[in-house]
Image (cartoon, rainbow, N blue to C red; front, side, top):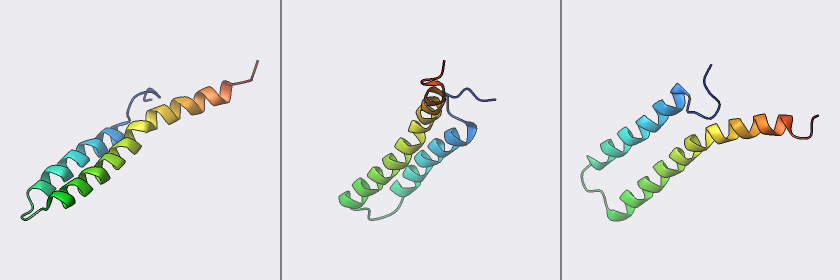
Length: 69
């Protein structure tokens, strides 16, 4: 069982894939500055979603125990 405050294997895999996508994107010819910035923002959105998942898991555990006892 994975510790709730750590990334799962799948979450780590997704984070690694985002860097691979970024590196492949940079290999494309004729990328404008705006396209580069747009892609960077979208990848950061995905990374933020994944990075927040352990916090959501811990928060759900805390909420279950809140007010009991």
